[in-house]
Image (cartoon, rainbow, N blue to C red):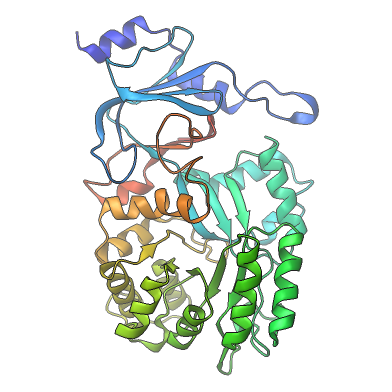
Amino acid sequence: MTLKALYMEHTPKIPCFLMVLLLLFPLFGVKGQVLAPTGTMALIGAKIYTDPFGEPLPDGVVLIRQGKIWKVGALGKIKIPEDAEVLDCTDLVVMAGFWNSHVHFMEPIWQGAESLPAQRLNLQMQAMLTRYGFTHVFDLATLDLGNLLALRKRIENGEVKGPTLLTAGIPFTPLDGSPFYIAPLELPEIGSPQQAGQYVNGQLDAGGDAIKLWSASPNGKRVVPMPVEVIKAATTAAHKRNSPVFAHPTNLIGARAASQGGVDILTHVAADDLTDWGTELLGTMVASGMAVIPTLKLHEWELERAGLPSGEDSPLLKTAIQQLRSFVQAGGEVLFGTDVGYMADYSPQREYILMHRAGMDHLQILASMTTAPAKRFGREKRTGRIAPGLDADLVVLSADPAMDIKNFSQVKYTIHKGKLIYAR
């Protein structure tokens, strides 16, 4: 009998399907609030990537207690408590919970979040996010911040099984720069540094965690650049409050203005000019610590919607892939994001494939979904790795992305702060 089998024989167990049901439908308290689980959960037998930098544990154990990671180690060296709920993860892979740093809750299905049935919201969260392992997401544009904050509140109080939700609130554009692709809706347009500073403080006061702006915005007739002094005013105001600034660049002019204005993160590569960054711009971006969210699949999706050739030889997608490759080779920081919620195809699998085509291996992609965003957004002491004392944010995969990059999307369980929020 193997050591693993011995552990399984002598550790009290709940059948896997029953444990999943118990975790998905725990005891309910007042007004439907889900009570936090008590006791200990043990994930045993998995290959565990504690972070993207060290060697994975080939046959490991993760113990969770009261929503936190309690112990991590090799099977046989970690004692399983007698009262633990055991999840057999033999032949599975465990990683830290994933971040999607570019999502939207703008679809009509999210309206009325304060009063929509929790079961409906759970299913919507599952379809868009939790089934793909996302335990943290950054909303990068809402037109109804109050509705988004109501959704966040229901997640935080346990009514809705969703990820930690951060938001950049309602973004703004340069004058005459509201993007044509959201028409007839319009975004706020700001033309002076003073207005930019006031708007930033207003959004953060209203509950935003960050700021987003269009450093160059297509209005349907032309691409309108935002003056650098306006961008600087916005970033200065946001940074005084320790809040990051995202910019939608559109093209190289927008990327350059964002870099000169002190923007922290580009929400996309800037492929519209169909040319690479250029040595000077690339060097400035990397030296300033700017991060990039590639959203490569978005370019392909938009081409398909327009009925244009969308293969990897198409000039737009080819440029997007090349820009990511150049940025990574120069040492730039990449944050994973897909633009779901604007993009109707929720699956991130194609994004993994395209990032891999750009030269990123499975560990670099893992870092873009775990340690990099956790550090970037000031949460590295709480999440992003599998280590004692951190929140129990975990993804269990049915196969290893080291063997096939598409396996990042083969999620079997998603665990957020010790609660099972998705099970396949």
